[in-house]
Length: 427
Image (cartoon, rainbow, N blue to C red; front, top):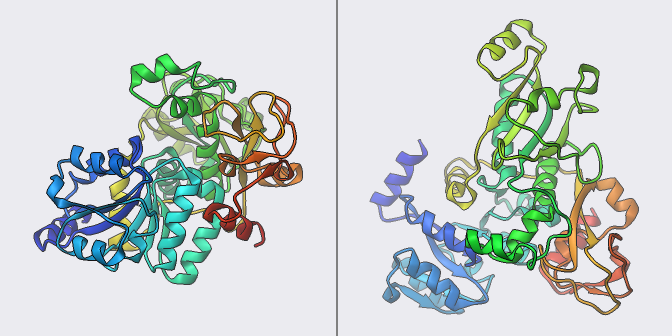
């Protein structure tokens, strides 16, 4: 059992040592949660804002005397080996420390995660990302490089894609035919949302306004379901998916195949639903052809006699991510990895009229939002992956609602995320 093994590490004072990048809301929450897990420590925390990283460790109960701020690998190595925590502005530092077992990025930034993961793989470290945006953008390349280096690459559980893939494994083990895999969206979809329009709701939830707007404008949902699509092979029925209103009582009938009166055009669909009944959860609607088993599932209130929906009513962000770290460390087990072929892409769409020379801001900002489609459609459109949009500079004017394409932007070709994406597209 993982818990028993972790307790044994704790008793030997030799925890799983994690080097993490990202000290914002997600990263600080991950640090706080790991403090409750026996046999596991965030030994290195990297962020451009080192004071923010210090604050995250202090808030988690680490004393200031046990925090060492340094960008020097030797000093960091010495600190980690005696049980101190290292704060750094260098995203690659953890990969240089022999005592670190796993590197991760706990942020929504593909650029941050790509730099952290690439350095980790080159340094012979296992990589467990708490960052689905990076996996959608460069996950196939990271997986390939990790395999060549003899290390592990995976996305963690906690966000909807990881939770969905755990449910996917469950369904496959039971021999049921997946028709639709999906998530319940927490808020109504509004592609025009900006930090200004969601400011009040963000304040009430104590969340960053950009982060909140990325949920409302759909960019986050499109990343999540692109990640799940690339890991499962399921595809959207249309650009942006359907996203119907649904309840746990109606979702099974809703996502039956068209031939049986539902919306699903074919088996193997990725989609989402709106409405409070399923918000925050993940689901898989399956066809069950065995009359005996289908009848039993109906009696158990998870089916209608031919189709059944298996619903997990929550996902716990960074709170349950440590389980994936333990599985990777002890069992060499991955939670979510992309297939070797691209399935879906989150494409960049102008949120308003944009001028030549203008820089694109961040997810949930004022300049763009993401929308999902099949990978081959994105290639035909030459659409810029949304994961590369933050910080890109436009070379021409782009009208509101228009796709931003590769030739429309100047990218930072020195960044790890752009280099990895170039390598991935050349596969």
